[in-house]
Length: 313
Image (tube, rainbow, N blue to C red):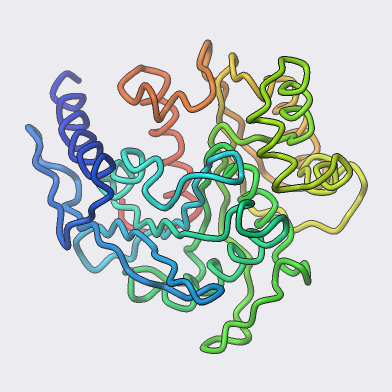
């Protein structure tokens, strides 16, 4: 056990170094005390242009032919901040365990309000499915993972693959490709945006309120874009296998609210696993990657991805 933790620590330190610089060498090999399951490369690519601005994706590619589960990563940042380099340590963990990851940039709320980012993510899903073979995978192995506000947006994207607002951007190279996913994973997702915003209002945290209103504009839109409420309103929803994990001390979403979403998802015939990490707060995996709860969450997420995305054992 000590050797395994040391190996993971070494790999994550490499990720921390990359995150600190924002750089991505063409190849990064895991140098660990115990041989990693997979060597992997990390590289940046420009995957599209939005509003005249090249948008990059960071690719975490296990070495070998695969086939690998393939994950589209959607970063957090209160809907208005951060970029493709967010949560890099966890994505290195996935690559080290034989999961290919593509972390994309998309328009934030500071560039364009909801649903612009959802349209970008929907496009990103279709683009990744069309190019899955280039990453040692296949379209039917593609799923999505997001954290915090990204954890909210991945659930919306999974549930509404055909929403005309989300699917508005044409993918010329594969016009018939759909945005349906093999699985969805939400890490400490902001599952109820209005709840978070009201907490910010009550506590006088203006940055939280400003970010939400910049992205959504108003409370009604927050409710329109709340996964549990979509199900409770009886709206049409596609429900791929889902895995949600968060801490019991999360500042923005209580365990009871997460359990409510799980019940709604299951009541509509979908499969959702929920993992609650005792005492953990928002962003716990990012801030405390070596704590037992963080390791438990990442192992469970990896197992779920491999189960539903197939790929190498």
